[in-house]
Image 1 (cartoon, rainbow, N blue to C red):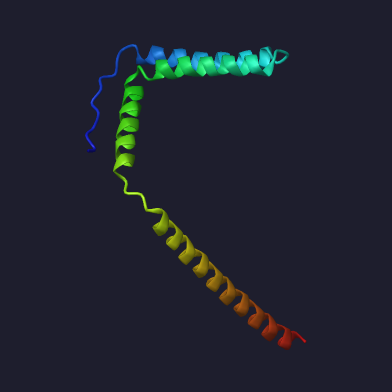
Image 2 (cartoon, rainbow, N blue to C red; image 1 turned 135 degrees about the vertical axis):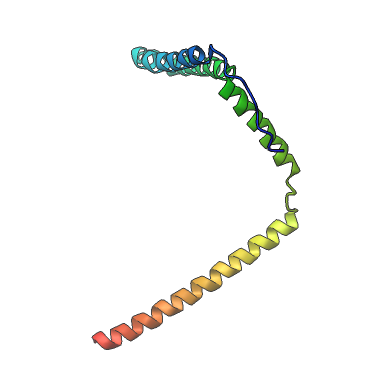
Length: 122
């Protein structure tokens, strides 16, 4: 399952990453330049720039490798056997009871040590 994705880096990958960086920079600068405009318009412009930058980044070798990793992760999640509701409730109950018991033991130990120290101090 962990087959390495062999992708050849295109000669244009550097240029594509430069365009991505330029789009992100344009979003940052444009957001500050148009600070007086409505927030809705600025957010829509930033989302549009992010989508375009993301699509360009996915066309690079690293972007394709990331997309392949994402698809493999999605397939692995489908293989996970999730616990039933009853198992989840039982496990949660066990954890709650264990935390309460440990909390009571620590409270008791703290009280005992505090009582002993206050006996020595006076």
